Length: 353
Ligand SMILES: Cc1ncc(COP(=O)(O)O)c(C=O)c1O
Image (cartoon, rainbow, N blue to C red; front, side, top):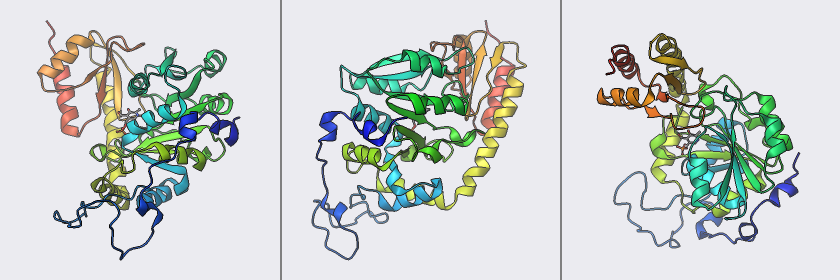
C-alpha cells in the first residue's frame, strides 16, 4: 500500500515545483466589490447567467454541491472539462514524456492511449481474458517499472462488464503507482463505486462523469476524487477557467432535481435487458455480452456489413471489430424506446446480400 509521501514522489519534478497561475479573485470571498482584476467587460450584455465574468477557478459553490451528493469532501474533488480532460491531466502530471508509461487493459476506452500519445508517453497494454476480466496477479508481476499510471475502466467500455472488487482492491493496494478507476458508467451498474475508499489509498483516483447517467454530455463536466494532496496537483495544472458558467448552472439544476435522472436510468436498464433478450435470438448474432453500462456489445456474423446496413437504414452504431477480443463486434448505445424499436425492427428484417 502506498503512503501519501510515496504517492507525491510520483509527480513529475517540473509539476511538483510549478507555481500555478493565480487569479486575484481566488483569494477573495464575498460580494459587493468592484471587480477590476481580470480585464472582463463590466457590462452583462447577454443577461443571466452573467457571462461577462469568468467563473470561479476553484469552482467552490458547485464543488460543495457535488461533494454533498457524492459523500466526499470538496477538497477531495477535482472538476475537469469532461473526464477526458482529467485523463490528459493525470498523464501530464505523472508521466515524463519519452520516459514513463501508462498501463491499460484492452479493449478499453480509446482516450487513455490517445492522451498518452499526445503527451509522448508509451502505453503498456495488457489484454483482458476472453470474458473481459483482468488478471491482477499477472499485471502486478509483469507491469514495467516505468508505468506510473494504470487506467481501469469499470464498467468497461466497450465490453460493458465490471471487475470483481477483489481484483480492483488488489491492484490499488499493491501497484506502486497511480491507479485510476474510470467509473463513467457506474450509475448503470449494480456494483459499488470505490469512491468511499479514496481516503485510505493516496494513489487512488476515481473518475466519474456527468456525461452519461446525468444526461449532461454537452456541458462537459467530469470529476476526479482523490486525497486532497493529489487534487491540489491537478488544480495547479488545469486551465484556470476550464469549465464554463452555463455548464455549472445546468449541473446545479440537475443536482437539485436528481430524481428525474433516476427514472431515466431505470428506463435505460430495462431497455438494455429487453434488447439483450431480443438480439440474441437473431440468426446473425453470435453473442450479446451482459452489460452493466448504457450500451451493449454484440458479436455478429459480419460486423462491417451489419454496421453498414444499419447506417443505410438510419441507425448509427459503433463498429469495434478492430479492437482486441472484439472480432465482428458492434457496440450499441441504449436509446429511447422508439430508437430501440427502430434498431430491433431494422435488424429483424435485415437482408444481407
Ligand atoms: C470510459 C469512459 N471514460 C470517460 C469518457 C469521457 O467522458 P467525458 O464526457 O466526461 O469526457 C467516456 C466517454 O465515452 C468513457 O466511455
